[in-house]
Image 1: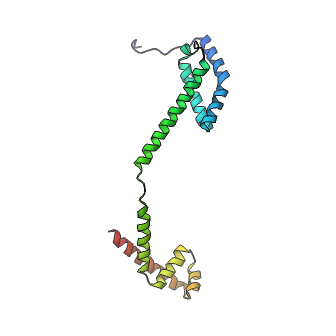
Image 2 (image 1 turned 90 degrees about the vertical axis):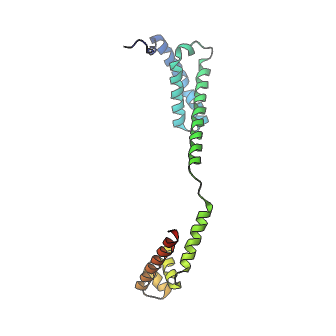
Length: 172
């Protein structure tokens, strides 16, 4: 084994037992405090686990402190704040990266559709609106317009073709 690499700290049996007692004494209270702050059970559990891991890694120093419990709580709340800060930063980057929709695009699109509908004959427009927008069957539309159902289907098909040509011709 390479002698230049640092060796992991091996806890003594006594230190491990002391930490286990510290963990058992503080885990429920820390979890509850984090849950009240985070308002999310999973977030509170993750932060508590991470805080206990940090304390365990430094247990040889923490156990000799005047207030190891205070160190645990400070560690946990610092971790929680850092997680929130990173999440907010990622959210800001995402929001900034996503271009805001231009509100005039919806107005332009609607105006284009209204103008294209204006190029249709009144019968084609009526057949198209009743079948496609109001979602009536061709039989129901035929009764409303006083024509045969086959006539409604022909009028609506011609209207769709005309709209595709009108709207498609403006894009290119």
